[in-house]
Image (cartoon, rainbow, N blue to C red; front, side, top):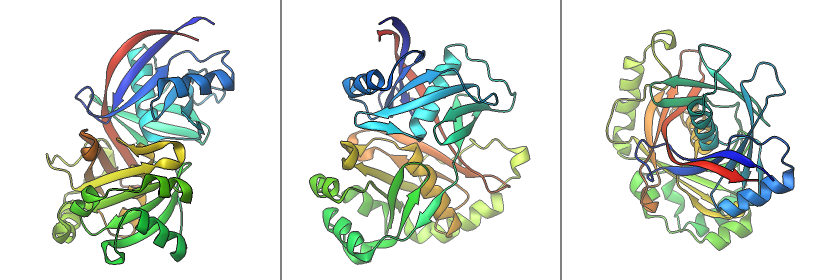
Length: 307
């Protein structure tokens, strides 16, 4: 065992303790899988990351991402939080236009604008969910069929069942049966617009005001104080009843909703409201069709850990 630099970062917030915490071990060299997993379980956070030298020459660093129950090929808030910690610790990217993170899913680009970082959403695979399983999940969430506008299985490394609900109020009122969700074995992300009646106007306005990506940062957000959408993430199969703010879920939801015309190419999502958090996720689709998922991060704890 040796002393290794460590940070605990709050992600998708500029206010400490209002986002999603992440443990970052900035030197994961020589640690075996069992040690990483044990430490991730000990931190009792939704994710813990370990920074390693890259094996791909195009990458600036490599990251391994662990939940208390296992390793993930990719996750959003660990991507932004690890990048924040790596830069704060003196990391120097090879490219001037972005940081390149090597994850198990591949290379992920991260761009910076001021204090906000944004990652390029990985390619998304979508598929239909069987009516029987959807009915089980609706029952576990105490949702009526007419409250579910659309449903898709979303896979960008992690697999989520995405549910578009009729309103943000419906999203916020859900009281899940977490044991039932755990037994079904599918992580569920729900999303609803804060003013569903205004969605067509929002999309129209976003289309009119969209700027060419070459002239705008992908992390710029939509400039609105109030969020356009409310998101919740239920991950009982991973031992996490509700995740405060979830980058991978917001990435896949954005790719799905924008592609199907349910959301504009630029919007602001809130997550964590029911947990007393105020996470904010800035979504932008650039002129080339790439979706970027952005947010602020703040370091809350720094020092060293014995591993």
